[in-house]
View 1 (cartoon, rainbow, N blue to C red):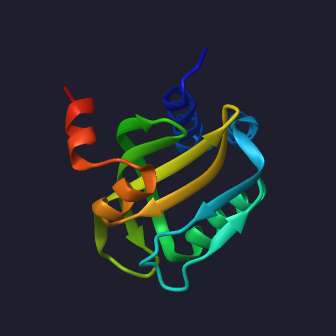
View 2 (view 1 turned 90 degrees about the vertical axis):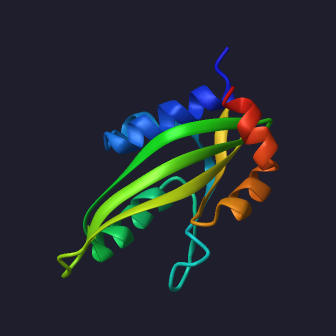
Amino acid sequence: MRTNGDIVKAATAAYEAEDFDALMPMLDPDVELHEWPEAPDQRVFHGRNAIFEAVAEWGKAWEHVRAETERIVEAGDHVLAFVRTIGKGRGSAIELELENYAVYTLRDHKITKLQYFTDRETALAAAGLTEDDVRQEGT
């Protein structure tokens, strides 16, 4: 039986490979995607097709961008992913590298909610984790 962590690993691999056909079955039909709270005009996207809308919107701001999941920590129905985002803003020569976090909420082996964070403490709280939990998971 696949764990929530396994599902998140498979979903992030499919997303990073732009294999949306593989990604869609892992998403609940009513999935919510929440952008970083610090983002200008932070939005919430609803439904599987909203993934395409979000990617299209992000493409307007980025010349190129990729997200690399470095580590995941399971916490019951939540999975916290430590992510490194690397990209270049559209119209800018500046390369950006950012540590950020994704909190996945799962129900019945489907991703029902995905929240992005730039603040570690906020991400930990959203996942129901503490720094001690994360340290213990790493040992």
